[in-house]
Image (cartoon, rainbow, N blue to C red; front, side):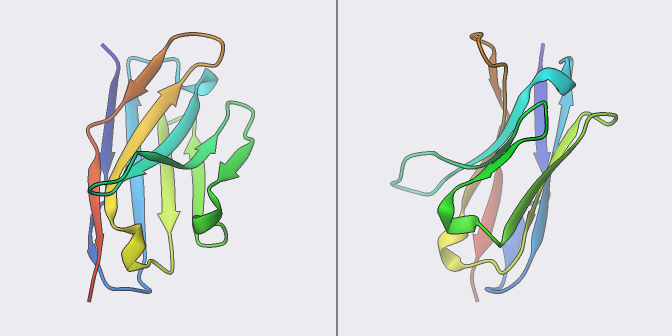
Length: 117
């Protein structure tokens, strides 16, 4: 079965950086749109960043200029570089793989990011 395994979360001070990684297995990785979502306590899950199979990228407004999504199709991985972190970035971050035009949609277990002094 498809597996998405996130890593790289942790506790960081405001203004700091973290790099999240998601390793995918048992999936034709290169044809999937990969995304990072986050969910804070009491809030809905939101899309943070996504990158299509063609390399088109999108970000939610609150992270533009601070976060960078990238993918390595040779290693079946997607990364989220997060700079200038703010307390409001605190959330459980999930990796998502979605194949457009199909019902194929997979989630990782999540990695916690906490931004606090």
